[in-house]
Every structure is written in structure tokens, then in C-alpha cells.
Image 1 (spheres, rainbow, N blue to C red):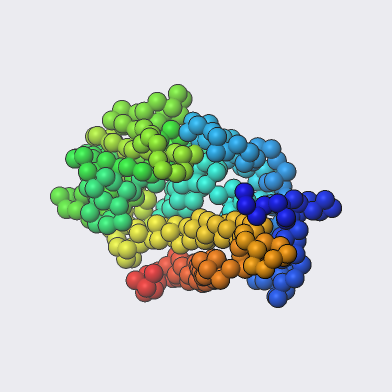
Image 2 (image 1 turned 90 degrees about the vertical axis):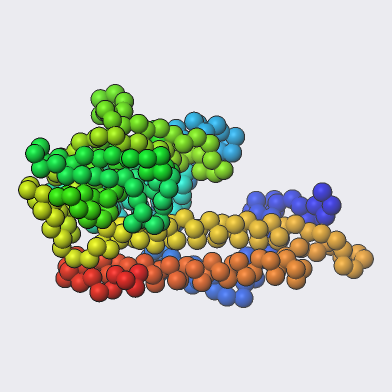
Length: 386
């Protein structure tokens, strides 16, 4: 291409393009201090680099040829990476909610399976379940003996949770809930880890007891056999098919018809149905929305901001090594990054990354503060602000 000849090859000594090397060695700010600021401190920067070296040295996590893989190959690869990461975490003593795990998932991004299982299914049980439910379900999920999804979105409703049409009706005669999806628009559609992987689903549905609707609540429902992975009676489940992106993410659909689950499968930290069908509420109705609020908060730092940051890095690096046109005879062609129009396109995006980064950190800290207030003091006063 035009402009590639005069400054194209990498440095023979460092393997780094000389234009990249020039930019890196003449910054107008202390790079390491900014890096530490973004990571949350020098110690966390060291931890991040250590985690990255471990992940990048393991061939299981290789990104080679990812764009040449079929949907099935992408899915199977993401499952292998998820299982290998779980093995690594046990081997190295990384806690599920620890700093090392956070950095590992940041490196791998959406290329590791069971994101909903780890990021929504397990945390929701911890947030909305009582201690007995946490003790029963969370260890199984953490050891991948069961795989969970979060079945909220329906064909007819997504973020408007009061409009969800899936129903759960309590039958006191046998101490069970009966789940139904009465119409096409009530089919659960899009949940991650559902299409081929999940054995269990956290189903968000309208609770009916003693003839009255008590609003949306969360229920643990087994949808596939733990023996042969076949669908259980009353359950229709599958993959939603090709998408514009994220083919490695196992998005699926779920239809439940007259599916029975025990009364104990309702997550009941803040509300429950007694054996005679009486509904007992503890705290705000909004608490059942809180898990998804926390998830969307984490999405900022885990998925959205890193994607924008990577896009900026790619575009800016290319703009450094790509030269186009000689402004004066006899000079080298100019880096396209030195053109004002290119700077006007890229630098506001880069500034946005920094702004979003610190906004997300502040917002996540506030959400965690609210979570502590709710769980330790029963104080729901800050919930509406979120």
C-alpha cells in the first residue's frame, strides 16, 4: 500500500515497529503512574501482569485462528477455556471473587464460556437466597457439577420486568410451584449458557399464590438431566442460532409447560411462600431487580469499557505505524496520527474510556455499599437511587 515502504519493518533489535518505539519512549506523562492509577495501585498492576503472563503462556487460552472457527468450534473452545480456567484457579488458589480471577476474566473476555453461570447465576443465589439455599447450590455450581443460566428476558419483554409473562403458581396440596409460559411472547429468549450448556435455570416469573399475583421472583429450575443432559419433562430448550457476534456465547431459548418444582426452590431471603400459601415479604419489592442491576454495573468494567479501550489501542497504534503522503519533498511520509482529522476522531474516544473507567469504579463502589446496607442492616433507602 502507498506509504508502507519507508517505515514499515519492525526494529531488528526489539521486534517493535520503530514508530511505535518512538512514541513509547517520549510520552509527556509518567506511563507507569497512569497504569497504576487505572489498575487501582502498583500492587494491583503487578498482580494483573502476573495473571496475564499465566494466561498468555497457556496454549489452552490461545486466540490463534479464532476468526476462522465455526460456531461449534468457537463454543467448544470457550468451554475448554472455562474448564481450564477453573483448574488454574484451584491450582493457584485464586478466589472466585478475588483480584486474580477478575483480571483473568478481563483478559479472556467473552472467549470463555459460562459467563452467565459465574457472573449472574451464582451471584444471584448468593444475593437472594438464604444460607441453606446457598450451601446447597453454590458449591455444585462452583465445581461445575451443575451449569446455571439466568432466564429473565422473554420474546415480549426484557428490561420491563413487571411485564414478564411467565407464571409460577403455588400449589399447597403438594408444596410445589407450577411454572408455565402461557403464550409465545412469554418464551425465555437469549439467556447465555442456556442453548447447549445449562442444567439449571434461575427463572424470573410472576408469582401467584392464594389467587393473587405477588410480582416477579426468582426460582431455581432444573431443565436438563444430570445423567444424559436430555431435556426434562415439560421443558423445551435449545440454541437460538447464528448471531451477528458472540457465536461462542451459548444463547438459548426456554419453554416451560406445567413444570413442577419444590417450594424450597424459590429464592427466599427477602420474601417467601409459607406452606399454607401465605406470602411473606421482608424489605422492598425492588430487591428482586438488584442482581441484574449489579450485573449491569459489572458489565461496564468487565465488557463494555475494555472493548472501547481495545478499539482505541488498535486504532491509535495503526495510526502511528501507518504513514500517508509527504507534506514536504524529501521528508518521510507523515504518520496519519499527526493529522488533525485523525486526532479529532480518536482522542475523544480515548478520553471517553478514561471517563467511563472512573465512573464505573465509582458506581460499582456505590452499588457494593448499598448491597452491604441491605444485607447487614435491612436498609433499602438507597435502592431507588441505583
